[in-house]
Length: 303
Image 1 (cartoon, rainbow, N blue to C red):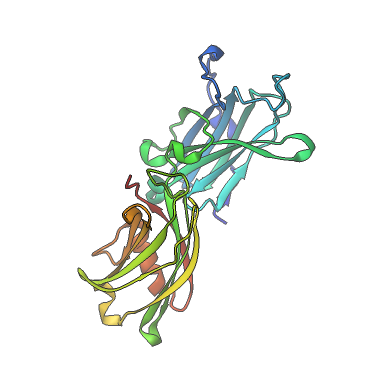
Image 2 (image 1 turned 180 degrees about the vertical axis):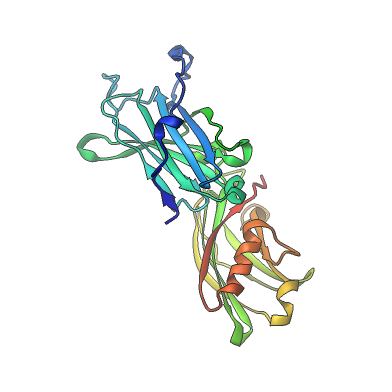
């Protein structure tokens, strides 16, 4: 699978140097915790290494105690969140020390597209877990050198979109060569952000282009009041083999009650029109005819 334990890697090589103690008086009111972690990349093994170091000042679930917290951390990679690890549970502490290293198999060329998502959970009473908050770290903003460890400090947030969680759209493509058509299934979207509400109404408009000429436009129904809308609608488009390289399809998420504002947009097509995942997904569809090929696509922030 794509998820990997650290295997033959010696965790001691990636342990953090001593971090000085914090002045706890610096924490603002309502603070959810300050997180220390490090990121490293092993070029030879194509493995992203994440060391959970420690957290300070997690909230206690009991106001009369400063240790009523049993924290653990789930570490996932976006887009998709299909790859994840979970730390051990630290008992009865609001200042847990983890020093646990997790590895994710990521090719060097895909590294910049990844975002690491940390979810901090209180294991709670009677094993009833409660999410304390999240933290996101986009690898696009970090200069990762082979074998060089970077220690990062960030505060935990209740809403991951506050700290720049990228919007995403989950699509399935299927090419039917004998019928000269392909199918686009708009499955769902996540972390859709609008300037005037946390839970916007939305729909997806699909426009098929040949070169720069719009050939066909279709749209999903409207999903009400959701930042994580599930559309689950399929659309069929005619596509002759001779037009494969000159065709592209644009998918845009619209907010109907705000002048049809576009909240996210992506392009699928050949190298003439698309880049990154948009081009890769398009090419995979033709390489695997009659298969439903699914992929999460990051949405550039338009707000």
